[in-house]
Length: 293
Ligand SMILES: NC(=O)c1ccc[n+]([C@@H]2O[C@H](COP(=O)([O-])OP(=O)(O)OC[C@H]3O[C@@H](n4cnc5c(N)ncnc54)[C@H](OP(=O)(O)O)[C@@H]3O)[C@@H](O)[C@H]2O)c1
Image (cartoon, rainbow, N blue to C red; front, top):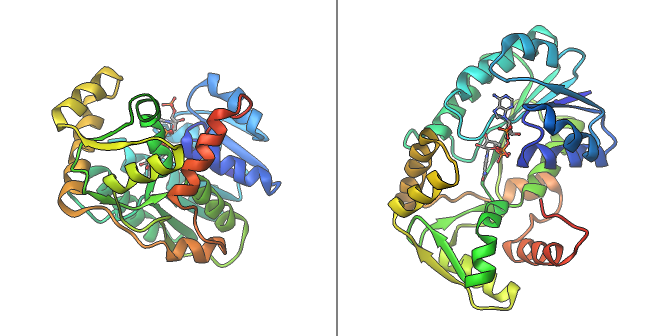
């Protein structure tokens, strides 16, 4: 059985779906009892509710597990201690394969949450466990946060210059890659950059949106203080706002670009393009029976 941590989140649900499609038994670790129905409806065979900060709860969660797909909480100041807890529990229980959901370019200290993931990668390196490290680029699914404004106002607003170039990846490709690594052979000690596109400027993103949605869409750069205010109003914590502000400053100064070739090799098909992703989401949003990922 495979344990997925953070299973009720965006990443976890997609990885669970990909493993269920391969008929792999999965134990889902969720944070709240209210999330049990969600992961069961996707196909989790077993569900545990627990806090990744709790060594005792994690020791129980890993019992009888063959492999673990560890998805840490989003932008968490506790990422390193959680990593320590998960690795220690997995090692003690004899888990054969530890797959860590890290991030593209964790080696930048200017982005604290990336830097923390590098420290967890270091812990894995020193753990003597069989491990694989997954380093995804910016999810295409992040665009869904802007979807309403894009459709209603034709505005795609970002808190950095519209010339900023980012590499994106479809979370469904990331999930397929995770399933390949978890169920196939020969991925021990590898670290895979999971990148779907070359660097695309935000103006180009708007132009692709416009083309695929059949309406004009304009990229607009909003001041960081406006973004911070909106983020606070939407309930994001101070720590997360500070961390993401630093990430946006990095994007502005250096862009955030990876190379899609590793993902194409791993999947054995070309990663999803941004055009295709937008077309699919548009179609799914039009269908009353589908909820986009
Ligand atoms: N978004 C991107 O573009 C991107 C790209 C590369 C890598 N990543 C990384 O992917 C990871 C997952 O991101 P995501 O977007 O899937 O996050 P998410 O949707 O917020 O999912 C995280 C899940 O973890 C749960 N959780 C939070 N704290 C927990 C705790 N202490 N113990 C147990 N469960 C806990 C959350 O539950 P609640 O909802 O109840 O809090 C949620 O279900 C993050 O580490 C992020 O850095 C993201």
